[in-house]
Image (cartoon, rainbow, N blue to C red; front, top):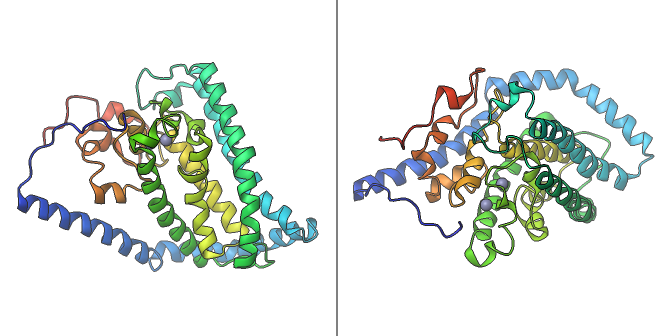
Length: 333
Ligand SMILES: [Zn+2]
Ligand SMILES: [Zn+2]
């Protein structure tokens, strides 16, 4: 539960604490420097070359779409920031719902993180979650996106005929990720305060072993403020005065990634869902998205003592991680 005490951790000396603080600071600074370096390394150069080759392609299609909507920018904005991201969310989740209900194909289910859970999922519970998510999207997300439009118009030209450059999109995405980490981490921790938790965030935590749609299964208040739901992902584009094409890309990415982190399967070549899955399992660990602020505030100390932490990595083979890193007792080191 929210107020559950952490298991006893080994006592640290003052030197140990100091060294730990230095390591945490170095980690945070290192993350910042790496982000900066990402703009200069060869990977981005190659991507830029690819973008250069395909940039005209996207620009031409954007031009056609702009003409098709006859300059109706509100419709373009709604399409890019609400309809297409929602469709990508439901396309991915339709596949996951099929897998969760049927337990097939085994190729996917053998990557289940919490063994024996949702095998198969309770159909009534899943239906209730899916309907709640749909209501959250229709009655909260869509109106919020419409309210965002006049602000974006005031801030810049969100539906301009010219698409932003590749490097600018990359810079904006970095800002969005950092803004989301900060807003999500602190709002999420606030929602775990015992006074608020039982009225609001408890709903999201009904699923101790989450599935894909649970990513947006939340109390309406929480859907507005926290989770990767709305504000943490909207504030970045509002700060930067982004183009709707960038907003579309960001919302699609954010929705697909939050689905991956809730889906309950640690699949090969996809981001690791172990961190947030552990949050659903234990409630008082791993509040953030990237994990940087959990490192800084020490809210990942229990997680780091588990096998889930060892498995929290990009799976580059086909052997499920619960086989290559089997569950034993708590790590001794
Ligand atoms: Zn969650
Ligand atoms: Zn939570």
